[in-house]
Length: 249
Image (tube, rainbow, N blue to C red; front, side, top):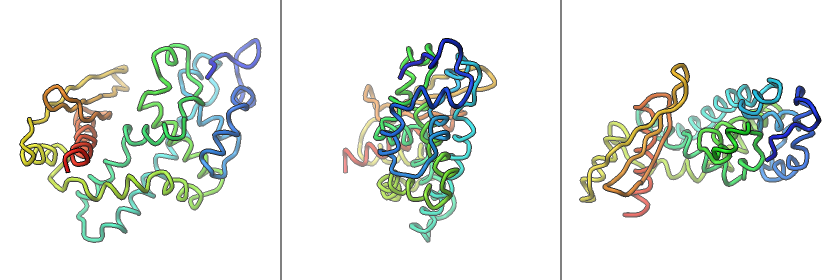
C-alpha cells in the first residue's frame, strides 16, 4: 500500500484516507462479508506510524480498543457454552490460545489485511505489513468497525466465521496449571527435549512489547507477544503446544 498522501500536502481528514484506499476497500468489504461503513473501515487501516507522517489524523487504535472487547466477549461466551464443566482457569487458557497476537495475525493474513494497511515509510520498509502485532491490531479494528456499523449480531457472525475453527481446536489443548506447564509435561510425555524460551523486547520504556520464541533444540515451534515476558511466554507455549499436538498426535 502506498504511503503517499492523496494530494500535495498532508492527509489531514478522513476523506483523504478514504480517497487513498478507495480502490481496495470494496475488495476488503467483499472478503469480510460484513456490514461496515467506508469511513470506519478506512480508519481501521490507519496505523499510527502513517498518521504521524500525515498530519496526525485519527488512527485505528480506538476501533482496535472496541474490537478487542467485542472479540473477547464473543470468544468467552462461546467457550463458556462449549465447556460447561471447565473451571475458570482452564477457560482463560483456552481463550489465551485464541485471542493472542499470533492467532489474530494468522486470521488477518487469510483476509490479506496487510495489503490494505496504511503504514509510515519506516514501518512499511521494516515489513510492518506482515508483523503479527500490527495485523492483530488491524483485525480487531475491523471487528470494531463492524460492531459500530451493525451492532453485536453482525460482529458475532464475523467472529464466528473467522474463529470457529480455532475455538473448536482450543478445547483439545492442554489442561495443566498454565501453558508453559502443559507444554513441559507434553514434552516429557513425548520424550522430546525440554522447551527453551528466547525473549526479545522492543519499544520505549512506557510501551514495551515482548516477543518470546519457544524452541525444542534448534527447532522453533511457537512464538508469542505480550506486554510482559510472562504473557509472551504463555502465548508462545500455547502455540507450540498446538503445533506439537498436531504434528505428533
